[in-house]
Length: 229
Image (cartoon, rainbow, N blue to C red; front, side):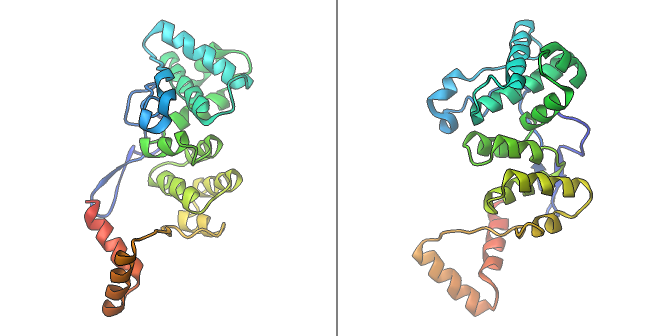
């Protein structure tokens, strides 16, 4: 469920559009229903349709169980709970109405946090489904708007950040601390990524960097910029 954070897209200097929010329909099991990601569990993926009364009732029950802690502590079940939260907000029209519809231990804060996880872009949700980004870390990544949320997600992976560190960095970013500084305060350099190359590519990269008098990362970055256009 999209809230009033900045635009869903951020423009890079090269004018490429980068999606920073969900693009698929709310409640649809795009990642949960992808067998290449979740295997046989994809067949059991539940879709929550905010425009269907019966589906919305299922979403309300799922949220109630999720808030009470009766849903399995599993990243895919938590993504399902997040989807139910987002669908319920869309169907009821507000976080408050959704929390009231779910009842039980459900609070507005709980609904908002998990609906935002469902609202993350596909590339990030996939890493949550694969178990590489903890759902609890995703809650804090989702608090950040714009391109910074993508950068924080990838830094969490490449910097092996804990949930507590992700929370701290997200708070700093939302307090107008530049993301490079916020990450640096936790020992992470934005953009640093460890790659394993074939021996031949490694040999040629090092040779070219030496001849050109540049760092290998400069050549890799230039090549990837062209590849990703």
